[in-house]
Length: 308
View 1 (cartoon, rainbow, N blue to C red):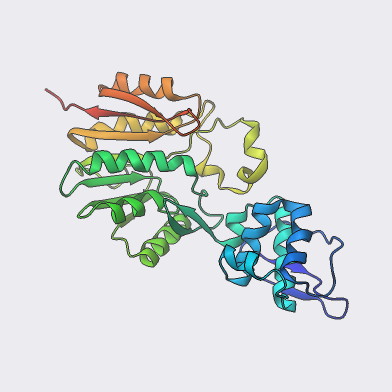
View 2 (tube, rainbow, N blue to C red):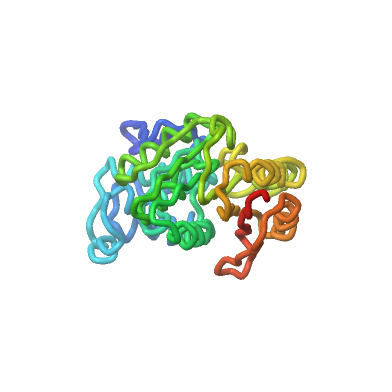
């Protein structure tokens, strides 16, 4: 992202916290001199809300949230104020906070993100919790994460399950760079592969396959609204009904599952019944759907009984 703004009436300055594309920043009235923390937050809250204002200021200052509350009188320096203004205006223009700061928390850890990957979401933690329960039943589980993106799922499983052998696949090289960076940063042992779903995995079998694949209908108007419009479309949309990738994964998974191995899939709020049907048709057993904290069936899975 390249963000440019006039830092003072005397000397325009360009702030580039990340080398990512950005919407143009619209200049708005603001204090010209660098203000104290309390004034900076008050200015930003009027434009983007209190939570985003605090997250962005913490990012600029490199300090915890408690510091903002404990030192409201601390003044920003000119560079900090210039950068903060630029980030606030980028957020006003709709850019996701996670892309502006370059990170997002998931399962208690901070993951690097970029516009090359989907931003990890809290509801996906349900998929991880279920994967931990199923993977934890084996002393050294072999687990495959399809469409790994930032690597949040695969890396979390690797860090939470001692002895697990994790393979993570993504078709996008740029996404794999982000995922590998996260694995190195967090000290996780994960094997990363570039490919489309099961491509390059002939003969490989796993005790657990997990995926948060694209599942939004291509014509869904939400794709052009809010934060989602900045995220990679290839990680979101999957055909007219949003089921294309789910269908492919369910159909191909049996060839890569051990007997009694599990397939767990995240999906859209209204797709649980359809995914249960796909699993039934493919010969899975013990099929179930699990609801997230909002009561929405968010993950569906089944056990592969093996062929007689």
